Length: 306
Length: 306
Image 1 (tube, rainbow over the protein chains, first blue to last red):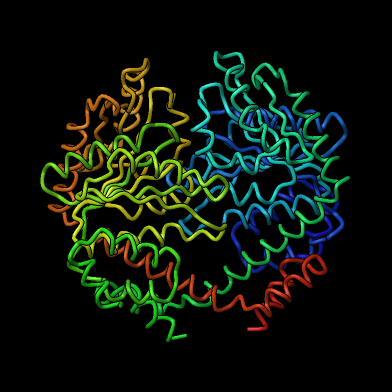
Image 2 (image 1 turned 60 degrees about the vertical axis):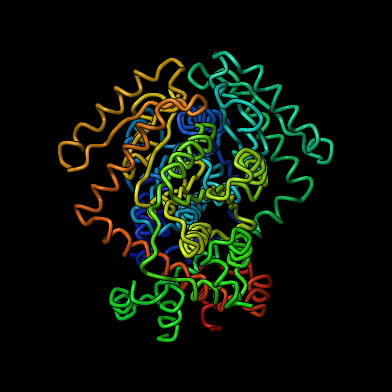
């Protein structure tokens, strides 16, 4: 079955792709073996990350951008990652909403991902899903995340172009500083720019970026958009294309992708090591001894069992 | 030196506490040994977590609450965790602002924490810092986090009472669903309630909680506050105290704390395993082979070296 599935994926069957992603997400051995067969260092999609606060309109922007790439002849995948949904299943709702709108468009593939447990590893899973889509000939991948936590930063570190989506209410400079992700953004978007305060925010961001723009070759653009009306999407599309050209001409893209692959390998290795370590016997020992000695002593005891 | 430092910490010396936290944060062997000596299953502080979007006023609320506990005779620690700051050092700015305001108050201890690398482990570090403060006789710990990512969820899973701080602009129910953390919140706060929309948001949250409140013994309160004027802080304080009584009477608190200790042990063990695995030789092998084979094959090769 493995071989024929690989063939179907390479032929671009959406059904085979969906099946492969399920195998990969569930982390069964079959999924792991499949990833090994699918990997091809030559087939790399261009990856764009959209991040920012909840409700900033990232999904709509992703959809708008995907449509522009599709119109330019590219196969586009949208991967929507919601690290907070173990508690609500929130990604499922979003998934259904989005699927309804783009349903039947065979050139745009949409997938929502959420942590099913508290185990993390979401960044590694989204990397696995990206590999499947690359094998299926997708040329552009849009990774959309909610929030500004560590998982999002990990995912944004693994894309080629990072777009930070804000809204006029995102407020003053100090808050932006706190958002942290500002340091890894390549393009800034102020979405919902029909609302008051968008001009003020744009100026504030541009001021904040002055120093950085003086030092770097890439001048960080700030784009005003209105995702619901589609205004500004073409300009954002142009900015992303320019950034792609910049990365390719400067050679930065190669180094970035090597780093990304290294992180991916580390995540796989670390996951395997943990799975191998936490045998039922060690879990039992932990259950029995917790609270009876300090966490440090108990850790030592557990490590000695290995 | 170790023994006398332990004594000074137990005696409540702020200077010794600060020194111990630095040792613990830097993860030197001395810090690990110290934690083992400091651990006392009997001395547990009551832990409150404040979380919510950036700019919601959590720091000011934390300060207001800390003052109320101090006035009630308790020693209070505020731990401010900012997982996004590897990129900005944002926590440092916040730290300085807050320190200036509470400087000289020997009953309130404030510490900001940020990831210095991309390694994560911030939840484990905040647990270590909490242990130090507990050993120094702190009875109440307020853990404040920015954002709604995995690190924040991990930290909120490790407190006794989780307070979700929103602002009137936090918007409609769908966004709340997406915020995810709603499922682990014990108390909801709408801060900056002098701004328009706070009544509407309160109603929306209460509607959303109806089903949950029908099933649970603890009725999730929604409190309006205005942190800058101090309005509503006393009510929030009462809610937290009621929740503490509820947890103690129902016995839930014991089970929660066992789970917390188990997670802490696991984090220590996993960290140690990773440190032991990634020798310079394996890092070299990764550097040499990355991109030449699939991430899965390379992982297998690396795991075989162990």
